[in-house]
Structure formats: structure tokens, C-alpha cells
Image (cartoon, rainbow, N blue to C red; front, side, top):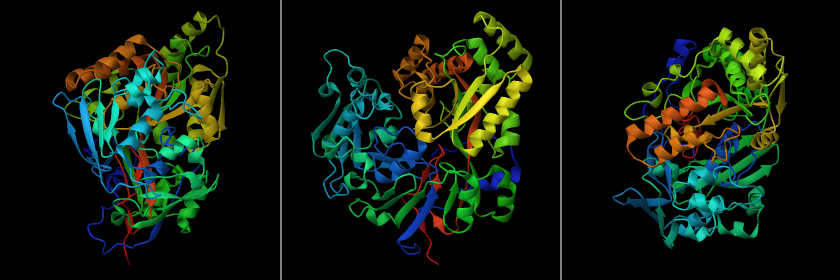
Amino acid sequence: MSKKKYGFTLISVLLVLALVAVGCTPKEESGSSEGSVFRMNLATEPPSLDPAQVQDQVSATVVNGLYEGLTRKDEKGDVVPAVAKEWKISDDGKTYTFTIRDDAKWSNGDAVTAGDFEYAWKRALDPNLKPAASAYAYQLYYIKNAEAYNTGADGVTADDVAVKAIDEHTLQVELNSPTPYFLGLMSFTVFYPVHQSAKENEAWATDVSTMITNGPFTMSEWKKNNSITIAKNDNYYAKDDIKLSKVVFSEVNDSNTELSMYQTGELDYAGMPTGLIPNEQFPTLKANNPDEFKVQGSASIYYYLFNTTQKPYTNEKIRQALSMAISRQDIVDNVTKGGQIPAYGIVPPGIKGEKDDYRTEHPDSSYFKEDIEQAKTLLAEGLKEEGLTAMPTVKVTYNTNELHQAVAEAIAEMWSKNLGIKTEVSKQEWGVFLDNRNHLNYDVARGGWGADYDDPMTFIDLFSSKSGNNNTGFANPEYDALIKEAYSTDDQAKRMEAMSKAEEMVVGTRAIMPIYYYSTVYMIKPGFKGIFIDYKGDIDYNRGYKEAK
């Protein structure tokens, strides 16, 4: 994990202290409490535990304990060997040959083979995958013929996709172009292996009895809409490094209840990335629990999406007016209160650029500025172009969460005060919300995105016309061309310039309304070590442990 730079907008002392990571990995077994349990909150039911179907942080938090890819990331953010014990990269940077560990096993004792990876990747690319096509299939487009197969090009079959199991222990992958962050991608969910028993059961990922996994943990108990328990996988090749016997995930969607459970000892961890602590209690919690309360910058963004296929949001001027008429600083100071940074771009601080942090090399302050008078002018022009005399009621939807509600209400008040617009805000259960957003069944919707790997592209290609996670309807040939240009070279200067132009374009058209760059606010009980929040704001508990008393 490269060193990150974050701005500070809340209580300075609180944030300086909070940037300290949560302990370190154990050096020896002595000093750790074997068989300890770690308990945290998911807030909601994961929509899917199938690596090919995961597209949200709740699901990924569980799946990242159940599965392991060819590589993984350590606490510093560095790529380290995982199921692949080693690899070779061709001189032209386009062919990767991975050697699978001899002792890699599935939770049922079967060997993990190169064929399991080939099967899983081609399965994720299958345009007829059930119950739905993989939203992350585009992340495999780096592989030769992957896009053609996924998009149904004439004559292209799964056999043409350039990932091949040479033998049980050798996986060879041919890319379209050199991709500097490809090894980092190997630790991402859509690249996880899938046991080939999935061929016989489309619903395998919905039942504990049919989920065969290869990670540090395996499914133990799943009480739908209540809790999930994962238990140490004794067939995991590095089982001696796994000190926790279980991780228990509650599903309580109320921040006050979550905090109460933490305070009464029912949870060992409370807060982000999947839970929430009441933000009005931050100062008190910091004062009373200085060793437990943490605030850490994360490479993630909070934004609103406009359905650019739905009138009047098809009009660029109307979208620009709505984005320019809010005060992001007021939102982070008075609503979120957790050290967030106002956002005017889509790539947050903490992502590598050419030589420095990308956001330092390409400041987002040049993209646009908040301007109420200009917003009024743009709104009037946009409404006239649409043949409207007044702006229809803006309907904002968000997934059930008190913070999302508070942000929506604050923005609604700003739009009312500054533009005379009426806004309706409504909440939806997480799975329903995702489905509606995926199918463009909304006007304005809450969005959030965290890095999948340490490169600006993880945010930039999100809004390409090929992205299964582009829920805005925005599609622009020039934007796609800039992404293709960045894909096609390993010249970092050229890549960053192309991505900066693309970012300026999507922000300029306001297909989305950037609001703030996240910080991660959480509490963790004393004694837990090796459990950390990574650079992108995700929790890694896999090699955590509790110190013996």
C-alpha cells in the first residue's frame, strides 16, 4: 500500500491520531488467542456471494474471506503470492504464466487447479450467465478475445478467450496490451476461482451446503436477513496463519443499534465500510474511547447518479445546474462530520498517478466550481430547451441508511433554497435499490465507488459504455476512445493524460454529481490485531487475531 495523502476537514487532533493503522500481523503464534471470534455488522443482506455476481461492498466483505485469487494484497497494499506461488511475465508484458500452489485446496478437500480459474473467468464472461450477466465482466476485457466473447461477437466462443490451463498447475493468460496493474487485479472478486460443481447447480451460492470455497474461511451458517457466520477453513493452504475460528456478520440496519451492540460487547467492530456509527456522536466517542475510535482516509467517492436517459435529466445544463447549486463543504462539515473531502472529480486522493498521487497531479478544482447564479442561468436555459416552464419534482432514491438520508435531505434543502426546486427523497432496501439502479429505474440515485485496484482506471472505466456498473445511461464514443487509449499503452504519462481528459469529460457533462471523497470511521475493540482498513476503505480480517490476555 503506497503512502496516501489526505486532506483534513474535521477536528485536526482527532484525524491525526486516527490515521494510525489497526495493529500489525502476528509474527509468531505465541501472543495470539487461538480460536477467537471476530464480530462485525454488514447492515444488510448481501445481494450475492457468487464472485462473478458481486458488485457491492457488503457482498465483497464476506466473499473476500471465503475466496482467494492468484494474488492478494498485504497490509501495505503490496501484491503478494496467494493461490499462485509464482508467475512469469513475457518481455512484451502481454503474457502471464502463473504457477498454482501444490497445496491449494477447496474447502471440500479437492485440489484448486488452473482449470478452476479458467472456468471461473470464462463463466463470468458468459453473456448467458444466470441469474444475471456479470456486472464486472468488463474487468476481464484486458484478456484477448474476452470482450468479443462477452458481447456475442460472431464466431467467438469461450475457447477463443486467451486464458488457458496448460496443466493442473499452470495458467497462461494473454492480454491485449501491457497492463501495469494486472497482478493487482488478480486479488479482485471477479478473478476468484469457482468450484466446478457450480456447473450442475445455478443456485449454488445461495446455500451453505453447496458453497465450496478456497479462502481462509468457509460458510458455516447463514440466517437470511439476520446473520452470516464463516469459519476457519482447515483445508486452506496457509491455515496456520489464520488465528480466528469464526467471523460473525450481523445484519442490523440502524446506526444507534449497531453502536449499542458494540458498547455492550455484542460486536467487536462497528462502523464503515459496511456499518455505520451515528455521526453526531463522533466527538464524544473520540473523547471517551480514544484507543478504539478511528478515522482513516480511503480511496472512495460518494456521488449522485443522474439517469441520463430520463427527461429532463437528458439535458446537460439541468444536470450541471443541480451539481453547481449545492455546497459540498457544508455537507462534510455539518452532515457527514467524518473528515470527508469535497469532491469535484471522480478519482479520490490515495490513487497512484504517474509519479505522485493522481489527484495531486490532476487537481479536480479545475473541473467546475459551485456557483448558484450560474446554476440558475443553466437551469433556466435547460428548461427552455426541454419546453418546460418549471423543473419537475426531483426524485432522489438511496439505500436504507441514516447517513444517506441526512445527505439527501441536506441536498434537497439546498436545491429548494438555491433553485426553488421541490425534491422527494425515498429509501429502498439494498438489493431492490441495486436492481432499480442497474435497470435505470430512477431519476437521481445515490452512488458510491471504491477502488478495485490502485490505478485511476478503476474509477475512469466505470463510466464507459462497456461497463456493467455504469448505471447512468452515459455513453460517449470520445470517452470510450480515451479509455481505449489508456488501455493500449504502458506509458504512464500518456495513460494519465488520457484518463484525466476522460474524467474532465464525465464530470463536465455531470453524468454524475460528485459530492465527497470518503473517510472510513470505525471502532474496534482493544486486543484485535492484524485487522485493517486498506487504502480503498475495505476491511481485511483474514489474518487478524486477538492478543492473548
